[in-house]
Length: 299
Image (cartoon, rainbow, N blue to C red; front, top):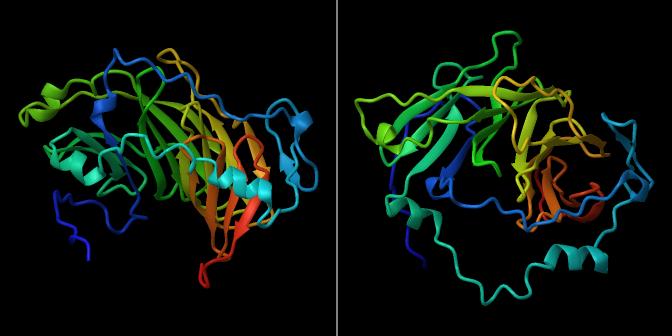
């Protein structure tokens, strides 16, 4: 029997919300660290996509189709398992518990304690709330349903968020968040300025999940509707630039309520766990359905 989990830190958060949070280790903050541009995603132009389904395109008037599912095909299995080979010699990364216990600085984004549409950013090990992204005053988005905090390729702090009304937003903090002295000093309140650089009501139902691509140039969202939406992350945008309002593409699938969306670390495939009890694996660049797993008896 393995060791029992031990409590390292405890933070009071808004437990009446959808209970979403995102964690970022601060060893990724170094401005001298070059952006990883070695990864090349498998993006196919619309002319090479497979027919057989329906899709919506919001830019350029193009459409992409969704093919019939290929349950258990050799191609799907090769794609799903391609990471298994050649990884045995790789260095084993530290566990989340080990990184936290080492005292490494960490940011946690979660729903605000009083305003369910706002986002609080906490710091560990100081256990301080260091910043808040206010909820929208011009529209009623409802509660925060999904959030992801990360460092972009241009070494800026981003927060991607999704809401109960189907809205998707992207915020950036260009400076201030690197002042670890102000964060650690309880008598100094860090000054973080957040800008909204992207906003779009991509879904007709509450957003359920989002994930960032390994190259940090795109992210995907899923919701209680049947849509999968691909959004662009600006690699650099000048302060005060106009907010973008168009996703790259909206894929219309035959399946509703696609939750727990995750992109694989090589960026080639992603998976969703649906309320119809099935897990579905898609090709990332085209949203081509590769394989369906029906392991579970309940949603």
